Image 1 (cartoon, rainbow, N blue to C red):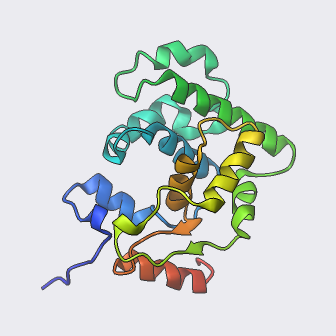
Image 2 (cartoon, one colour):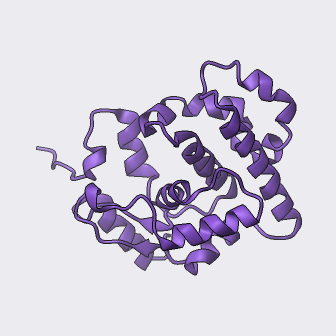
Length: 198
């Protein structure tokens, strides 16, 4: 008989997209610049909506936004009106404009010899913050480090990066391990950290 896996309470679902996202992405330290841009963009899109809605439209977003290649996304301002007619994605002009603007910030950052990966992980000294929450209800919507990062990102030209969006992004990109301590991924990520995520 197959042993039952204990997941975070929000991931105890029959929805495959949500479960796979929890099992394979959420909380795992990400150092891929394009992937980090994708995660930030999805968190921007999620603001005010359910995460399930975003996951349902993720593939359509990839198709519409050049698989989140920010060097291409930064050029999409002329296509914004066309994007807003695409019913397969979330058609929010402010959010789409912010994503395009953020792609420009990242491209300029690279021209200055700094990557998004370096920029973000410097805030946590390149070590994921380990929280120890027993239930999803204990997890805050934001915290002081997210507020600090949000302030700096806004100074550096990023848009739609308030402290709540930034905290969710930190969770997604693994700067914070907010898996419930009973979740099998919590323990796996701790072991990965001990092994340098190899």
